[in-house]
Image 1: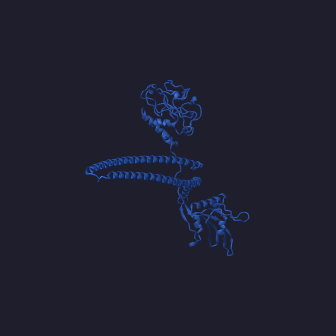
Image 2: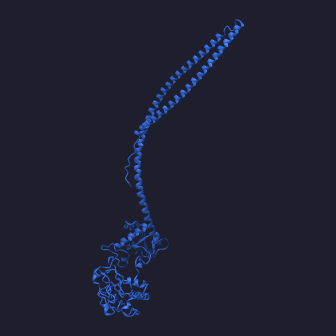
Image 3: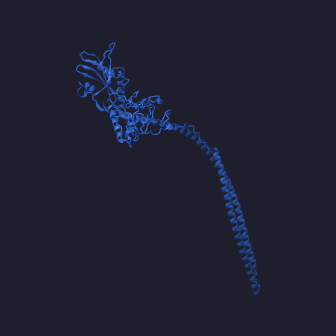
Length: 521
């Protein structure tokens, strides 16, 4: 078997493996001699699983306590282990100097026993014939069940014997994977039960005295409600029989989960004062010192109300129902809890929204006031601008009228000059034609030729004049268009400059946004 170690408990079970290695039999002199469970050999020590142990069922351990592993007790011990182990087998198995196990051929192991087993002192596999030590039954059971290379059948038999013995002792060894994550809680879920509905509390010993007709009188409805005014009962009822008041009354509460809780609170109040059902059934004390009657109370059950209605018939019977506790109390209370959480959430949300709304209202008020002031200022500015515009318009109209008059004068003067020129030309032509009909024919012909040349020259001159005039007028129109274009461009530039100046003025006088002093949510 492979060597396994771990833990430092002094009660560690040192159970030997069921079989040695295949080469461990060479020292015993027979290669086919396989040790059995009921025959201890040189190389193994067997746990005493007998039921006749002198230690009342404690596990017995073969081997000695390792002095190097002194300290606290092991927390993973299985049962209570004997502090003085008893070895079974030959004497050489009893005289082992170390609890780590020594092979039967007395060959020393290559291990530094002064240091605990760990990463810095890894133990090599034990030599042939060595004894393997296990820290408890769990590693041994796991080894016996999972051994797959050598002597598998013998290991399985050992595991079966250990399981049978543990079963007889009323315990078991679970694998590590099964020892966690499994618990057992309540045997079953809380069952539903029926309750009286509407909720009622029975009040006993409400008698007062005997009346004139030898019948008992008792507490009235209003008087009973007044006695328990701290508990909001809806109404009170009393039980009557052949002898009058029976001393049994009930307080009826609201048919809701709150009503049930109030009735339960009254029931618990009676229980705290030891005047509940148990006190009434076992050791009732009807009168207190001084002659006052002691009232007892408890939650009503179906049997109590059957007794209450024992002598009642028809409409005088107290009506009630038996309903599910989960349906009438547990479920509504759970829903009320959820509704309360939602209500709390909505209240907080409403408070935050209200705070935000108040801050916004204050900001809106400030902005409205500033907007009103700005509107008044703008109104004044617009009025002043309108007045200035009208003044400028009048001035521009006057200038336009002046310039139009000037242009009109210029145009009139030009027209007069043209008319004068035309008149002069016409007079000159007429003067040339005078005397054409007088004289001889030759003279007339010469004069006609001269007149024709004059007219031709004059016509040509007039055409040149008109051509030059049209050219000058066209240039004038072009210059005028260019001038108007420049004027429009300058006017646009002037308007842009005015707009920029007004924008700066607007930025200067626009109301600043209020500083948000609201709290962080």
